[in-house]
Image 1 (cartoon, rainbow, N blue to C red):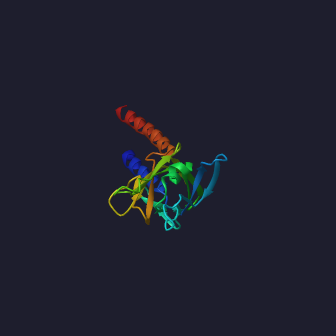
Image 2 (cartoon, rainbow, N blue to C red):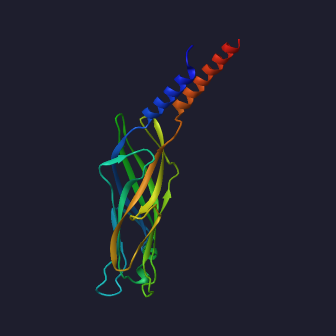
Image 3 (cartoon, rainbow, N blue to C red):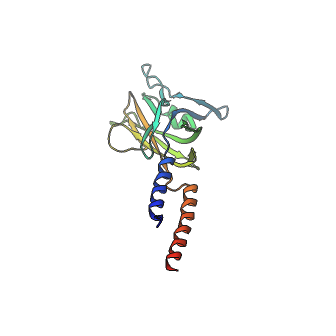
Length: 225
């Protein structure tokens, strides 16, 4: 007698393994900047930007920079570094703070992937918010946060559907956070992480299971007959 249950298990495992493709590639990023201006709103795109007037002649401008990642090797449901952000926090006047200078700043990233059978690009955007504290306070550290603006988290590679998720910043401590803190008069870098997770049952596999269930029903009916 043909073992339908064994066939079901073997084919299902095989179809899932085939769909879990190895993903390699790189990321690129830039800030989409909308600036407040007395002459109107201006827009620009750059990998780094500066703002602020120093509180003294010794203080420069604050700045934020993004660097993409080359030579990515992404595993299913495993965190991977998508970018590196460097924030330089200087002592600037409150009238030239981030919130006073910019109407809006977004981080636009592209995940450029390739696999054995296909290449492509997945793009996502995150709002950047910088909270600058009063420099006269004992604790005057600033904070930088990212908010994922992603209306379509799905991407497809080699016929397999994945869900993209921005995890947040990692500074060496366990877990991820959507905010990182930068002390006054200092500069440091922090890594931004994401992950992609394979959708357990792609449409082809679901159709396969539906068809196979019909075989089970037919086999059971023949037994009872």
